[in-house]
Image 1 (cartoon, rainbow, N blue to C red):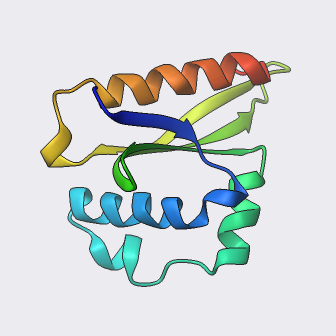
Image 2 (image 1 turned 60 degrees about the vertical axis):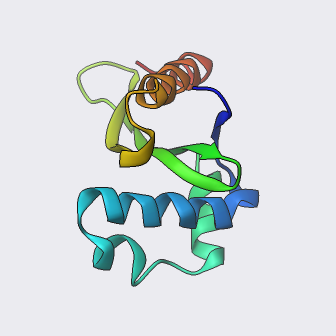
Length: 117
């Protein structure tokens, strides 16, 4: 994973989040959904700061080469929250380098920090 930085995104990361969205669109073969009608910067900033949403990005320099989107869900059967992994992708050019493993590892650390399963 040399040269790849993996981190959690927040409201200061609207532009990097757009890069993650574009990468999702390319890798999922659904550019219209992920790139053509992205929310405005205010919406994305609020979402990135929402404690119920987790966005992680993997970057090769400024280029998004991996991403993960997850939600914190309060459970009904027990007084706890669980993490729901919604989207995970790595650019084809950067696969087999441990990026997905790194993203999931960071998600596990975030879950522990917030007391979620």
